[in-house]
Image (cartoon, rainbow, N blue to C red; front, side, top):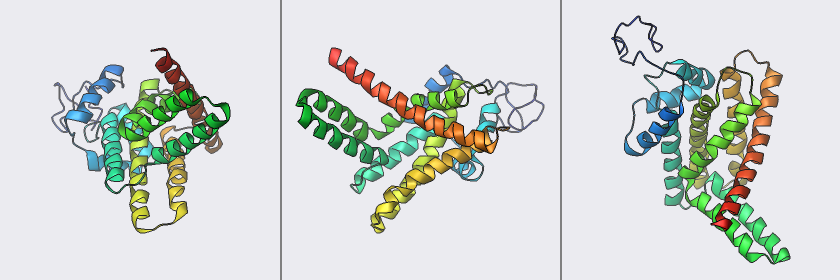
Length: 254
């Protein structure tokens, strides 16, 4: 049996060269659920290696991970959860809002203004409370939104060989690395009070998304990747809005 990580021919359960298991399946639900406990209770190897790969050859390295080269990589869900937690704790330590915090603050203000016109204070309070919960639980919120963003990218790039759960792994790495970009600009804001530094990381992270998709989906033309990436963001906002509406309806019922 050929080791999917290093290509060595191995006749045992683990490759004698790189020590990766010779039984490497496609990403599945059981493996992703196991990662949730990994991200909370243990730190896996390969954290710095994964960051380096995602800065130099992101799409290629993620595709290789899905194809079986997993020995040196930090697991995707754990990667996203750890970086989101670090970002949130740093923002609280220096009393700065996260990217999600800026969004929810603006959305909460808009909802409050609309409620003054309709005098539906109870409904607006529920919406504001939900937005505040998302802002105050950034790491969990990123995991909560991950399935919706992955569904958006899966639909946008439908017809290619990657299944939905593989899109979840792809976007966990993508979102985790974007969080590093947020941390960098967040640190700059502490020393440089320039308003456009609050918007720049969002634009750069969107550009990073295109770069990752461009490398990851081999064979697609440049224009196809651009259009599908834009569609991914559009669908993501639609799915997120729908999720919040359903969440509020369920909360109201129970």
